[in-house]
Amino acid sequence: MFQILETKELTENIYFMVVKAGRVAKACYPGQFVIVRMDEESERIPLTICDYDRAAGTVTIVFQCVGAETKRMARLKAGDSFRDFAGPLGRPSDLIAEDKEALKKKKILFVAGGVGTAPVYPQVKWLHENGVFADVIVGAKTKSLLILEREMKAVAGNLYVTTDDGSYGRSGMVTQTISDLVEKEGKRYDLCIAIGPMIMMKFVCKMTKELGIPTVVSLNPIMVDGTGMCGACRVTVGGEVKFACVDGPEFDGHAVDFDQAMRRQQMYKTQEGRALLREEEGDTHHGGCGSCGGDR
Image (cartoon, rainbow, N blue to C red; front, side, top):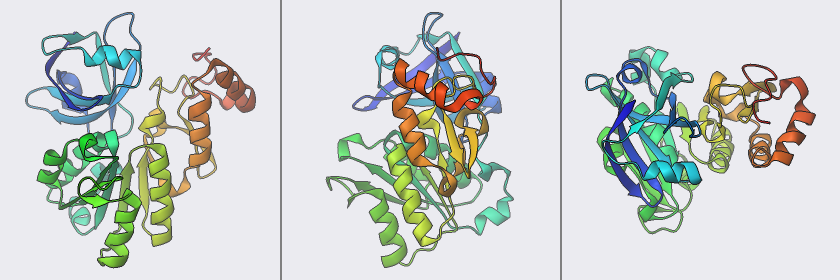
């Protein structure tokens, strides 16, 4: 059992939990995720790692209530436990393997949208701990939906907050802030890392491609099973079939077929849609096991 040490509601329908999981905390890196399960009857839920403390043996997760299972999870309190807390899964951020001195010479921009701020935070924090200061854009629909602003400000080189409705920070979409920073304020970036809703990442990539900025995206929003067996997170990257949970979750954003990924995301929600995807994709429908029928 994995005990919950702390819980809080960050904003409407978005929750924060610190979990005692020493083995995961010891082995995880920014960019990876865990699969949690409340009890033997519960669904398995993949969640990106928001933070970790190796010395304390804790892992922090942030999740949004989007269905019955996550609503149940939101009712858990400090002292309750998860039946399973499996990980770390997925590939760590490519930044981890780069030479630290080379990283210090790069101008890096992170773009976080909504709950995507949670997986952006550990990467920015890791860079900060290694003497690299990245700019960060955090976007939300409105001020009340912003999360982790104080924590992000403590580790970012420059933090730019934007709200769609102009209720706080800069007004407009995150793409407008990217454009303003580069074209009006003279900023130059060697790399952009964008994490958030699929539609946000699509348009960030469209913008950065026009600006000539290499861009990495995290496709954690399309994961369901988290082990490569269900086929939900199948995506085409540079003309090749990949699965976000085992091949990613990070990919070259300019090579991702976002339209296909979003279409599959919608179709996968219904039994009829899954059946059609199996028919269209044949033996390549599934990930790690090939054709287990795990989504039937």
